[in-house]
Length: 441
Ligand code: P5A
Image: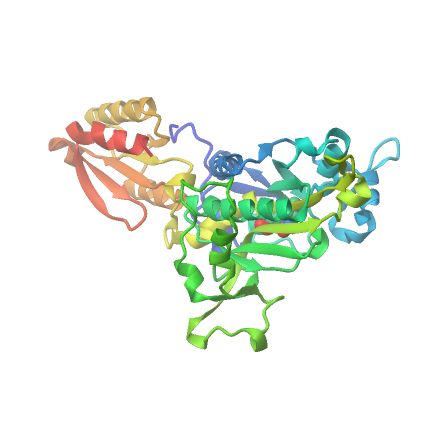
């Protein structure tokens, strides 16, 4: 995309309303604009990041055997009366009345909707297990929306729901998601730590929050240092085998949010205990028959008996992750996107638009990058070099190519890596290989 055409309203000044660095940088780098408290418009650059995150989430869900659906944002109150949650959910639920005086709500989560579908469509044990997910906007009328998209009122969530015949099956589904989550966050350059957690309005007795450590996190967390050294499962993971041993590698170490933390029962040595703040980027639950029982999600077993389905639900804060990744990866100059979620991989800077050689060279490189499928911002504006460099750093483009008259005399262009700031030179003749390496990512 040419910078002269791109809608990318960057700000030099720090917006006064933003309290945390990710919110400040999301506004300054032109990713989002607030529309009402806790409700945002995603501008082109922000939307590209949001979609890349959603795509990683999708790929790992598919790999773990979940199937994508798309549920509505607006749900009937009746379903929530069926589960008993319509009154329980309280003021966080945005209630809506239509022209016929029917009660609706903007979904804060979708256990009821999906359980109702399964109750109506699945009748035999042969059709199980099933795991269905969607990536859809949710609304929670939070008392204190804050920190930009990190605690929004409208936010994008990946939520999925597993349906099994018995508890052993449900725990296997839970374990699959546990490991799929670790892989998902690792692909975004994040180290998420699973922590025993309370279940709140979702319910159940087995639950983990996935937390990344960050000073501005809203939760206080306590965990064994050993957890920080564990690696997420690799590409060779087989979700069809018993996964308990793999999950136990993580759950065997102490890790708890402050709601669960009990200093008296925590036997981790002081110098081994990490006490930090964290951002909750996911939360998984096993709650047995809490929804299937009242909503009638049952099937006929092999002997004709009635089986009430065992369920779990699993959430990832997709829009929150945009802020969380920035919290984990930035410097004084701006965002440092991991390549896997960067809006553009390469930023091409034309230092002197009025110089025929510079512009012809940039056009050629831009065309080559496009042909190789490397997402590029080409800064073709007739502006000062300093401003162009500052913008590329602010927006966090992983690789920056600078073409100027001085370098071109020796047929050289400058390459800068945003992470670490390391600079090198590439000759025009070797640039084809450099582009091919970016395309392979
Ligand atoms: C699990 C999926 C649930 O809602 N039902 C379906 C279960 N869990 S949860 O913990 O309440 O939410 C899942 C994740 O959504 C993100 N999240 C938010 N993101 C931005 N703004 C909010 N106000 C907000 N509330 C929840 C979190 O990442 C959470 O882990």
